[in-house]
Every structure is written in C-alpha cells, then in structure tokens.
Image (tube, rainbow over all chains, first blue to last red; front, side, top):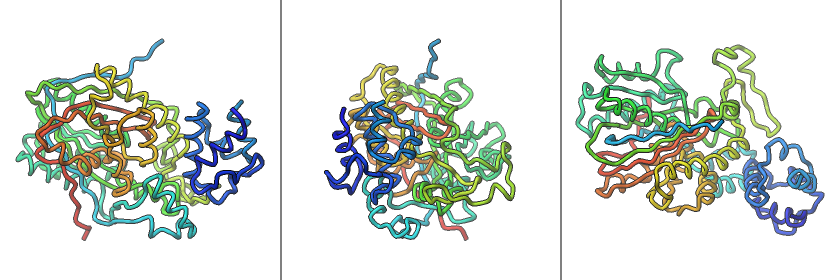
Length: 74
Length: 364
C-alpha cells in the first residue's frame, strides 16, 4: 500500500482523468471530472483494491488525495 | 446468537405469465442539459458508465394502479382467465392511489374480482417483487389459493424533485402483473429474504406520512451541497450508502441462496437483479464472477429504474424469447434497496403464454 499507488488507482477509477495528472495535494473534489459517478467509482475502487468500505461522509469531507489516503490506510 | 435468514422452498407452483406496462411518454437525459448546468461531458459519463439514457414517465392523471390494471387485463386475456379464477391479489407499491384503502382493494373493484378473493398491499420497492412472489407462493402452498395475481408498480417519477440531479434522471415508471399458480411441475423455488432497518433513511421520503405530516415547511425546497434541490416531501437517496450496501450484501445473498438450493452459480441460466443502474449490476456480477451475458442490464437505459416493476420489466423486456420458449430456464431474481430490504429467489420458468411489455395509452 503506498500513496503513489493510491493516486494511480484514483486516476484510473475516475473517468476523464489523465494518468499522472494528480498529486498528493490535489483537492480532488474540485476536479472537473468530480461528480456523483466519480464518487461511486472511487468508493468501489477503495473497496476492491484496499478492502475498505469507505463511508460517503469521509469522501465528502476530505480535501486532498493524501488526506483521503490517510483515512483509507488507517 | 446466529440469525436464520428467512429461507424457504416450495414445489409445484409456477409463474404462468408476466406483463409490464410502461407509460408512453419518454424522457431522455440528452434533453436535460440544463439540469446538468450545460455539462455535456458529465452526461456522456453518466450514459456510458451508469447506463442512463431514456426513461418512461406518467403524465399527471396516471398512476401505478392504472399501469398495473392495463398489465393485468392483458395478462388475464392472454391466459384466458376470468376474474373469478383469481383467489388473491397482492399489490406491491410505494406510490398507491390512496394512503387508504389499499391499491389491491381498488384494483379488486376495477377488475371485478370475486368476493372470495383476498387482497392486500405490500409497501416495498426494490425488493418488493420478490417479496410478492414469496407471499404468493405461500398462499398457493398452504392450499388456500389456486391462482394469485401479483401486481407490482410505481410512479417514482412523481415523487422526485425535477431539479434533483441525484435522482430525477434515474427513475422511470411502470406497472406489472404476474400470475402465480399451482402446477404439476416438480421444480422447486427457493427464497431468501433479509432486512437492515437501521438503513431506513438511505432511501426515504421524509415527510408526508405520520411521522412528519405534510405542512408548509415540508414543502420548502432546499438546495444541498451538490446543488440538488428537494423538499422533505421528495424522495431522498444517499447514493454512497445504497451503493456500498448493494455491492456488499447482494453478492453474499446470491451465494448463500445458491448454496441453500444445493446448486452452484453455473446452474443458474439468468440473474435478473433489480434494475437500479448498470454500474451497480456490473459491479455485482463481477464480484460474483458470473458471465455478463447471463445478467440482463439494459432495462435502466430504456425505461429507467422502475422500482417494484423493474424485475418484471427486465423479464419482459430482455428475456421474452427464452421465457416463452420450450426449454426450462432456471432464473435467480434478486431485488435490493429501500428499507433497507433485499430478497432473492431461484425458480424455473418455461413456456410462458405471455411475457411482454405493453404501452399505456396517454391520459385523455
């Protein structure tokens, strides 16, 4: 489990995101591609890849990818 | 303390026909660019991944009772049954004509069913059709009923707020009629039913019932963080919670039922899930590692999420040829959602005299 891999998995899960375009400090909820679908695909990805059932509130409240990763790896 | 899932099995009962009636008026997500703030890219994503496209909605003046009545008349006609032949009518709906009397009683009158016929409603949505089948099987099995008419339908399009992007483009309307009857066939039907009432508020119309009666306040429209508009009398859906629930519980329920039936997944010819959206269904199918060709999932993109009518709609719209054919099909039906409630059944179907989608005439 690593932050770099998490960012890659995130990029792959969300439609219309270029691989390599995101960083640890990216505020993912401000991305153009962030919508209700992206929300679901990220929850599905976190469940499938990290075996974590992430609550919607956590995803709604985190700002950056590294903050989100901290919640997932906790 | 280990809880026993409500599992049961039945013999010598079969489905003798299914009809689903959809309203004529069609809406398309492509025409709703304004709802999405002009974001055509987002619409394209929703079409491609979630499988949103077209849906059918009633015009004011048409209700689920009307759609189910049309379906029932077509069904009785196709099976050459007189109203006197029906021993019980079950109406599954969350959008009845009245809070009382029940839709089943109203339809009993409209269809001229006999006084000896039992009638009741079941207030469930996504899992409702399978619950209805379960009740019908029990009624026939106990000896009291030869034939049960199961009506299942909803007009969810009427209770969502048109400016709520999280639900308005998803839900369509529909009404179905299914005949369940005693038969000589030896095939078995296996059922399982489960609930998680702690998730009651994941899919809810918060006001308008007895808990929070309708008032000027409950009709005030509020805009949420996502820019979606709704009042307390509109349907609210916590998408993330429903999604998590579906991908967690469904695969488990399917595997447990298949095991209870003494079968394996390969023995099932078709898996007909409640047609919520294609993304959830492909996710569930992938987790179960089942062939996607066995999983109808085109109903949402044509008709929308039709709540209690979605499973019969998928049967009629996607499996008509195989279910009317001579070869017996072993199908697993599974509905999951509002309640939270989920129910599954494995049963055989063959040679249905009718299994079709009809369109209701537009209201005058």
